[in-house]
Image (cartoon, rainbow, N blue to C red):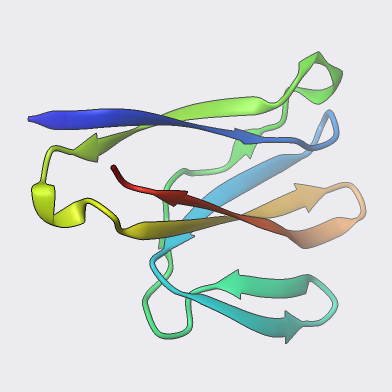
Length: 101
C-alpha cells in the first residue's frame, strides 16, 4: 500500500521544460556550462519524470509523488534536482531535500 504523498514544485520560464531527478546522496560537482550537480555521487541518480513543461507565470509546476508505506524508509533524506531545458540551453537547478516520515 502507499504511504504519505509529497508535493514538489518547480519554477521555470514559459516554453521551457525540465526533468526531475532524485538521489539519497548529495555532492557538489561543477558541470560547466550547465551548473553544479548537487545530487548523486555515493548513490545513483534516478529520473522521476520525463520532460515536463513549466507553466510559466501561472505558478510552479507541481508533482505529487507517493511514498511507499515501508517503515524502513522513515527518516530517509531524499534529495531532488531538476535539469531545465530553456531557450538558452540546459541548466541544473537548486537542490531540494525531503525527509520521509
